[in-house]
Length: 255
Image 1 (spheres, rainbow, N blue to C red):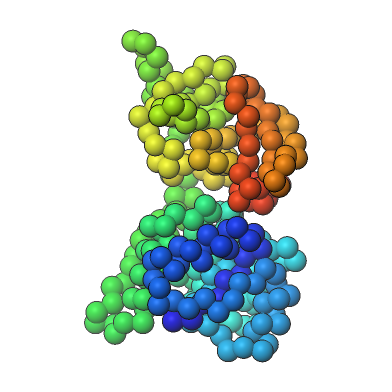
Image 2 (tube, rainbow, N blue to C red):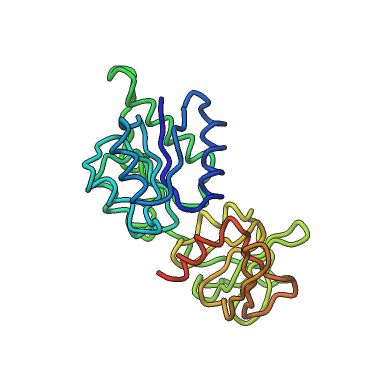
């Protein structure tokens, strides 16, 4: 099986290649392109691949432009930092709609669905819409975490999601930090928390921090193409947007 990746963030593209090779080494990645124009030129000179991994927001347009202009009808796995294009993705031959940072298990499930399409009808399962677009269903129904029950000492408190400023992993513990600056330990992993939050309202800038839009007060350039943030409530540690997340973070901030 031959694949083409269209992704304008080099680190995201490299990570996607690694995951694809790990999940299914039989998939041959023909090339990685970074724009609508480069895709236009590539498809003019080459036969279509078996699968297209397509970012939606590219430097010179939308990934949808590639599909509509060139009338491409091959299977597509959309890879994007944004959920607001999910409905439009249904109009194309989409296998799945994966939100960045792409989870390995989600990508594996997408590739399994792609492989299932190639099997005879009697052996291939027919996934439901819910199975095909689990994350999309959550987005459309608003099925995200509304509040957290937290405990401090012998007291419990329900914290509404609107009052959460960020989640912080420190010294083996995960903490919720509220708008009043109070910090509450949680029995959740950061990965689990990330899956519970609306991606338009919260963004994971690195392994240890998931931020709400409302907590970001200042953004500064930082060495090695990273970003330095100042939060409210303030955090004692430096708040750094990891290099592979900078592009997605900027687009998230610019919605």
